[in-house]
Image (cartoon, rainbow, N blue to C red; front, side, top):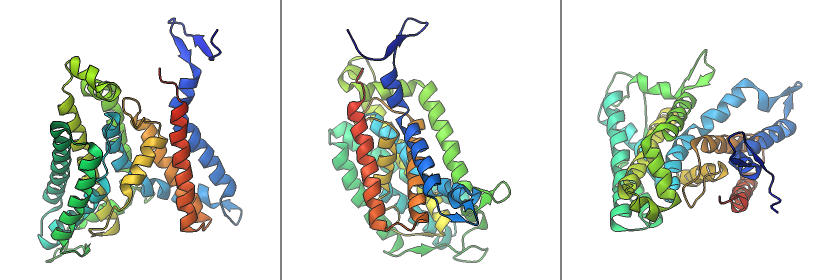
Length: 339
């Protein structure tokens, strides 16, 4: 007799409560970290600093770039792949944005289109190398990381490019500076709105599109998906294209927030993006996961980073704590039911 806490739904299908709990592991983790952040937050004149409006919106602003990258990473991991190049593509895109706007005197719209196209093509080429030539995604994107860093250094002559605003030569259009501003009465950061809007689009896309069914099928069992007529190679190429495109978008946001583009920008971002996906409950083997979980995982990391910074915790200790959280999330996946 099974001891699993299953009950029968009205439809007659059994509900595995353990699977349900694991499906919401990122939400429970976020709640736990949020409560801990309140408990350990410094106070000023009796006010909990963590709960101030400015601080909470700063958390969302801080995770916006990682969150955008993590959404693209979710698509890749859902098919059983990995993309280690996203941080470098962000740096390439930040450099490209700065150079096109400042040195080439392009307008915001054409500059953004070119940078997004660069990210998209870069991702598609990586997807083709992996899918068509059978090279492991880990190797392809590790090489892609180096290539993107090299291209960024070539594009910027190995130096950071500052973005100054105005109508004169070597000045970017003032419109681009909006990426570093806040709206709705100077409260909500624009990068946070971009992140939220993109997350909603990705969630709807994964829940309603025919492509999403192919995506989960490839990640769940690639051989069975191929035998069922799913265009496996095309699916893989497309998800890498999405990842490159979103990494480029994050690079544009990065350049707008910091008013500069450097070939070293985005270093280590790929690890934070993967961490957000794993904490969000997406299986590294593919076939199971969601953008909702990834967004929650990104917010969890943001809250954790914020409360550690508010308490002036040593940066090395912060890395240790984040590493332990990631290991704990990965360990939980091992306990998750497989059916």
